[in-house]
Length: 215
Image (tube, rainbow, N blue to C red; front, side, top):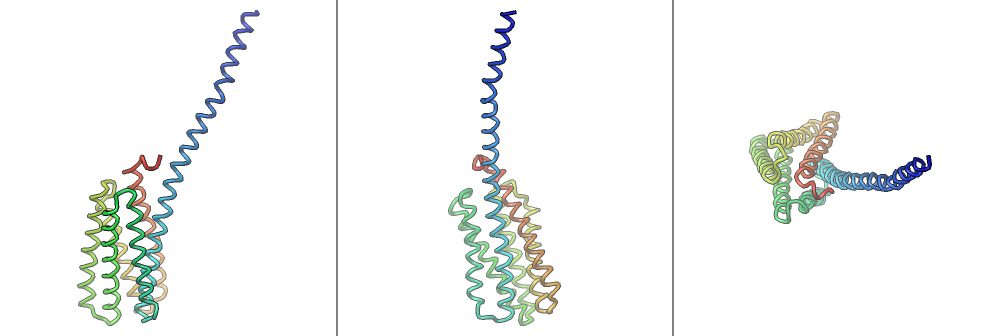
């Protein structure tokens, strides 16, 4: 009986001794998982914020230019800064040169948008069509650049994303010119929601390509 009791005590002691280590291991795993989530969430938040700004400063440019407001140059300046910010966001993953290249392509995207707005304002359909073709070509160049950098980004899906953004932006211009305020607001909301989805797609691709940066 005495030997049995001693054996029981020893086994029980080992169980209780091992419990803190097991709890610590589980807590460490939980903390590590939290850190991973926090890093992903941080990138997702930053990406969404910048693409929301892209949607709404583009809208501000549309409103300002069509109305001939005095703030249009300041609005354009702020919108171009957004493209710098987007390029800077990818630099920790793809480097300085790649970030600057993306910024240059996105700035071209904005400059062409301004030309389309100005041509549409005076009813110059010929130049609207001309600049729209340039806009699509620029979108294709952005997609090619991104998909070459990250194989997790589908060329087909990203192309559809950018083309939809172009269409929704054109819709905003057209609806405002027609004074269809309901259509204008609806397309603006759709553009914002769409760019949030595109930002999430970009975030997911970065996380898949660089999992070690999110450990």
